[in-house]
Length: 454
Image 1 (cartoon, rainbow, N blue to C red):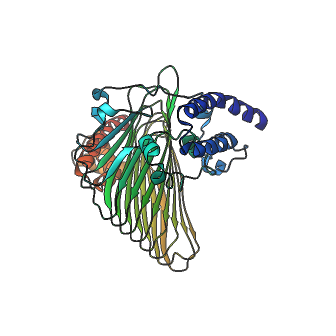
Image 2: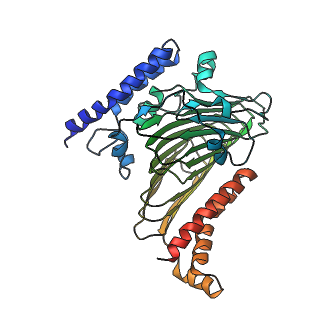
């Protein structure tokens, strides 16, 4: 198929998206946000999806190892906004905690399953659609400020259907004493469905909060989650942000997380990916104030034919900033992973301390990992390191553990758990740490049993 034919085929599949866009326009065309949607949809039509290297697409190099043709050739439609689910669907994904909770199903808010019990006075948690309708002047200055529609077709696609999601605002000097959980559930049926979750997190100067952003799904179904999260933290702030993906094995998931930090801010992120047929996570960080610090931890466990791609960009704009990044992956079967991390240090960013590490453990000869950590440094006084490893379980270590009385599957389990379990132990929320540790340990045990029979 030549380039023109590909473009025509892709534009034909936009027909359904145009219909959905027009329906959204008819519902609330009077809102100020709709002008943003129009610009974004025109940009999306121009950019399309990065389906081949031949198409003149700004992202094409970044998508070299991830083929999104299955997304591009499927005509996804917006789900019924009146769809509702029961509490039994939500309970397995709440981590056993009664934190303030906003629940969405295929992009539709679920008021009966959401609550703000225990929310700290002064902290504002609400639906994005409510914020856009009631107080657009307060929200619109942040929408799209970091998530650039001109650079990403998927970001433009999300912004085209900007309608609902979550807003978390912590005023200056306020400490959110309770973690805040935003749960996006998705499920497809005979008609492939798409949702565009949008999450906005804003912390004023001196504020502190913990936010859990999780994605999950029930029985296998053909669905596509295209998420964008924008995070703004002011001076002398502290934010712990957790992103958990447990969607079903037929789901497609593309996310963009934009983080903007000011002076003396401290942000810690944890990303865990276990679900989805094809997952792509882009995390972009801008350290735009002196002495800002970012700590990024990521863990992915993929099996069968799953594919996960993590792209990170950390931009040091000001002096005395630190960034520490560790991503670890465990792959089994014919799974594939991609890690592409870049640290960019501007000339003004003297005394930068940046460390980046990606490690991959392959439990099958058919699994593969592509990794590319990068540094681009324009300052003179810096401490920057990066590294990557791809390997298998060490047979000598397995043998040693077996001489101490462990079975082969127990030895494989212990070594695999030890490879990445330290990342989970860094989670500061005890309830979340316990729940994820149990989930991780169970999954690792199953993989180790499979590995012991190889």
